[in-house]
Length: 74
Image (cartoon, rainbow, N blue to C red):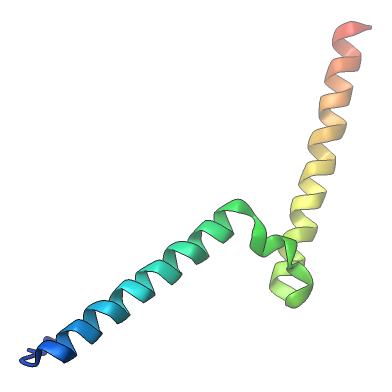
């Protein structure tokens, strides 16, 4: 729905609020991309399950890496 804003003050408020939302969205995406959200996994069950799966994947990759190095150099 398109709404025309004829008042300069209202227009400035809309632009400021839009900028704030964009900034918060960028911040949230940045936190997710960096893993900060996962570091706080104890806050909710979904984050905790993601953390558990990532830790499991890391352990599997470490074991495979050690086995590969051991097989290559022995």
